[in-house]
Length: 106
Image (tube, rainbow, N blue to C red; front, top):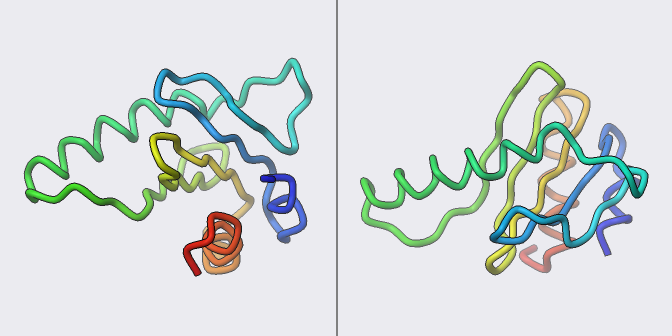
């Protein structure tokens, strides 16, 4: 499913992460690879939870984190989070469109 994201110019890897932090599916990573950005999912969920509480809202669309290794887009998918790591913030529009197409939200 998420392998199609690798066809998008600039995408390095992607992982679908469960609520308990386990990788459900991944693309662009070897079986033994665990992306360094995986810790960002838990931190991102904490930030999102705080924002949702303060803004009195339940839904969130995505969270972009621009870290040393490059930008990472976190997108909700049910009770899971799709992590998409890519090369440069200038690729954000292309990556967002591909993620939305993949998740059926376009």
